Length: 413
Ligand SMILES: [Zn+2]
Ligand SMILES: [Zn+2]
Image (spheres, rainbow, N blue to C red):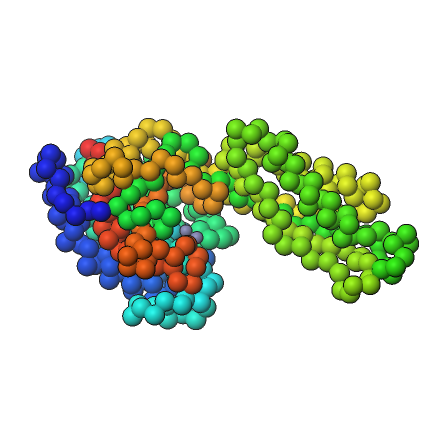
């Protein structure tokens, strides 16, 4: 936890901490304002307006003119915003990414700042990400002399789906000026407050989904010889799909094939004509892209053929794996160590099979996505992400802004 001042750091560094600490009440205020007004993917209009209004208050101009040191653009990939802060000295361009969207969940927290939008909730912490990014923009706008080059702060829509990172990249957020590296964080209730999860290589998994319909031939439950039982065929498929992870993927690599949905049949004495299943595939190694998909189709097709059934398969690659660059991960690690102040606060075993569309940014430029511990069981702030009682310890907001600012000063120093 950030509770003591560093003794060995230069005056500069402790000044960052003091300045960010004095911002803490605003960070909390912004986060709670956004928490009360959650919006689903690509509908983050109020959120975007709030971000733009703050940027304007701090002297940012809405313009494409790159000679204006504090500028922003709205409406990128519908509701996305980019705030750019250029110093007076030439230097590299660092991107900082935050997501803004909420989830279709009815909030069950009884807090004064609970969601005012029925059935929608910031249950993943993206309200916090937006507040942290705003705090970073505020600080950097007021300390342009402390770094060289440019910082682009990317407020992204629709991380929870269908994905705002890819369309923002397609609309050019990483260009003009060209982003050299990018960082981003996720508040993380799987880690306690005062810790940072950072690692080189894969942090989060690729996310792929499939939907499959098996077509058999229905009939009487007592006369199976006249039918092709879609349930029997599908049951074999579900089992055989497990061999992809157990027998096809290199055991050194991690992968998941989950059939999460299976629907068939109408009555105990009727053989089901069709069966529908859908599932998700996860893996870290980018080399597995296309491979699991191919094996799934081979298995479904082979089993169907052997039973005289047929199938329809729809397969979607949603997000690639989140792969961190070793140099930028090292930058984040060194900065995080200064902020958490103890090596025990750095958690390298923080991989998760969850996915994130930050992955698309990391495919374009080297970067590092990391987890900022935000759970505090003593305050009952430890529910998992996407839970109707999810909430986090807001002390983490200041830590997040401090890590971002220090990364800027180290990368663009
Ligand atoms: Zn989420
Ligand atoms: Zn999230």
